[in-house]
Image (tube, rainbow, N blue to C red; front, side, top):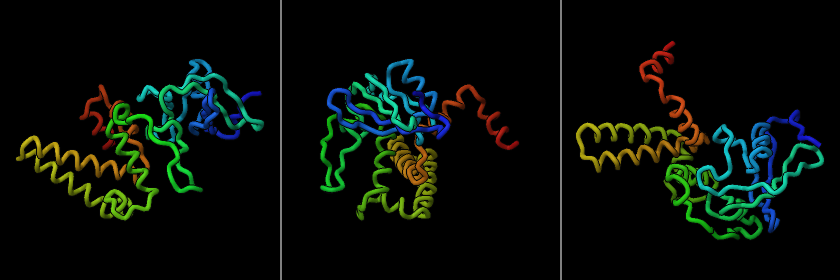
Length: 220
């Protein structure tokens, strides 16, 4: 049996610990990622937020070595039985499924300090996404997410304060204002659910391209 790509270009893929049987995560795979799984022996997925193929563990080192790959009876769902190095979840937990709806609490403790594995930008962005789904009334991030006009006004305000700092204040104030602007910008990306990885991809695309030429192309 072969995967039926005619149903959709992105198919769900479940990663399961080959030894314990624990369900680790669910992601999506396109045809290219699927072929990379087969050719490399390591799990590759297509990230809908990053809009690109990514090898699991490419940043954290928490890779998934594929022990077996199974297709369901409809040929549109994939099960990867893997040897998980480190943890599967970006929160530092073994599995992405750690919140019990029935019990109303987290059931698996963190096993890894994610600050050692991920950039602070990625950690902060995922924290913003988590705030979208919680009921916190004391969270400034939540308040910004619930009030788009306030968020936009804060981004403008922080950008102006950074310009003032660059113009006539010391380095410490420049750093402080830049951090404020970055934080509020990440909340804006979180509101739109645009991963900062896509910004990194855009910056990478611009390497070797003259800034003047780039601006001229936009005008045309």
